[in-house]
Structures are given as structure tokens and as C-alpha cells.
Image 1 (tube, each protein chain N blue to C red):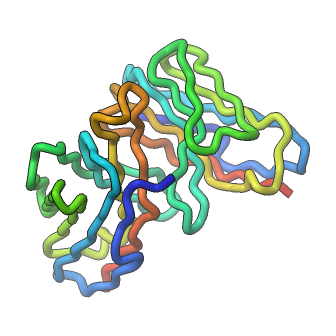
Image 2 (cartoon, rainbow over the protein chains, first blue to last red; image 1 turned 120 degrees about the horizontal axis):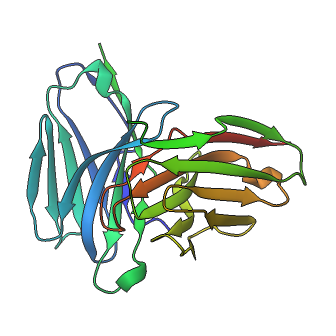
Length: 115
Length: 112
């Protein structure tokens, strides 16, 4: 069953604009991860944020986590055509899932950046 | 570095045929995973191996078997392929279950 749900399902922006993608989840987590998938390729890990962290940066990426609202956002600043891809959030289970906790992916957001 | 290598990249099968999808990683990772990706469904975990010598069912294991041959290799077998197993299959690996996963580029499987 899907844990994370991304919003919106699709996003189209102009090059240079910022892109904000959201992810909501239902149960407690240890960490939340964002991945990118280019067409015809495998997923590539972008950033991991732990449940005790509120914000993390990596280059043009900024991720926030609000555990009280069970939500996360991924901000890509100054977008480029090369950022066109699908983006997935994935949650790794919290204290109730024990040794068998696994990464659970959402259905993804399709981002199109127009040149 | 090759990372995670999947073979074959494409395959067409007839209903009832069997085949094995191969996956190998060169990062000395302990954990390995098999997912399927279908339109509108995201990635769903089929089987995983937390460490060499162990395998466990994921969300959608029916119709599949796996073998963790050694630390590097994790294969997925379809014993009797069905059209519902038409999908893109991804193998991934990670240092342990809480660490980021590294993905192969997938096997596109069509079952007629």
C-alpha cells in the first residue's frame, strides 16, 4: 500500500521558475526520501531527511518536513529544462514497523520545465 | 562504477513461459530489492533481501520467486508468466534498509 502521496500529480513551469512539490504520508516515519526518474531510466536518490530534521538543502534543492502534519515539500529553485522528470517521495517506516520496515514510494509527480 | 546492472533490458514472453531477471551490484551493499512500476501505480515492492542469505516478501510477491545468490546478485524469477506481469521491473540496492537506494535502469517485460 502507498504511504506517500505526492501533490500535484503534474506540474508545468517555465525555465527559471521555482517548482514546489508536496508529499503527505499517514504513519510515523524514520526518514523521508525524494527521488528523481528521467524517462526510461531508474530512480536516482536526491535527498534524505530524518524525522528529527525540519529542513535540508542540497544545491538547488530544499526539502522540508513537518511531522505534525505528516507532510514534506521539495523545492527546486531556478529550474532548468534538465529538471524535467518524475519525482517520487518515499517513506521509511517509524518505530512501529520494526526490523521489517521498508521504503514505500508514492505515485510520483511529473515535472515539465519549458525552455 | 557500474552501480546496479540489470539484464536483460527488454524481453517479450508468451503466457506460461518462465524467465529469470538478473541483477548485480558492485557497491558492497547488504540490502537488495525488486520493484515493479506500472502506470499510475508508482513503485511496488515485490521481494527484498535485507542481507545475504535472507529474502522476504514485499507488497506484491505472488507469481514471483527470488534468489540472493551472493552479496552481489539478486535474481527474480517468473515461473509461469501472465499478462498481468507486464511491467517495468527495477532492482535496487542499499547499504541497509534505512539508507538511500540505488536503482538499475530497469527491465521492460511484455507478456503476450
